[in-house]
Image (cartoon, rainbow, N blue to C red; front, side, top):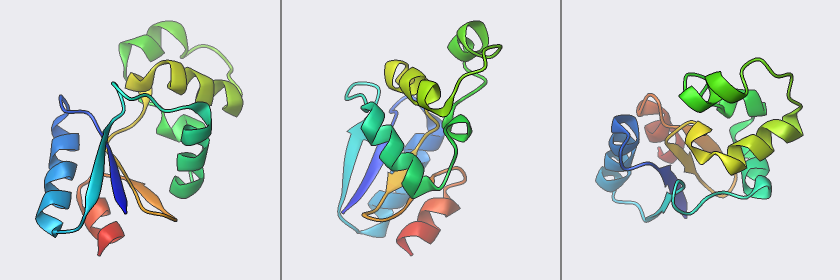
Length: 114
C-alpha cells in the first residue's frame, strides 16, 4: 500500500496528495507533524529513499538555521534531530513497500506509482 507523509499546510504536499487521489490507487495519509516518526521509521525511509540523512533535512527552516546549521552532526544525530523536530523533514514523501520518493516535483510520485 502507498503511504504519503503529508503536511496539510504545504502546497507541494497538497499537490502530491492530489496526484495520489487522481491515480485511483489505495493509499494512506500520515500527517507526520501530528503523528511523528520514530528514529527507526526515519532510518527505514532513508533506506527506501536511498539518501543520506542530511539530504532529508529542510535546511531553510528557521529551527535548522538557528539551532543546527553550524553543528557537525553525525547521521545518527541528524535522524534524532528530525525525529524531535518533524518540521525539518522534506515533504511530501510517498512510500511503497520497497521504495520512497520526495514528491517535489510531483512527477516523482507519478514515476513511483507508474
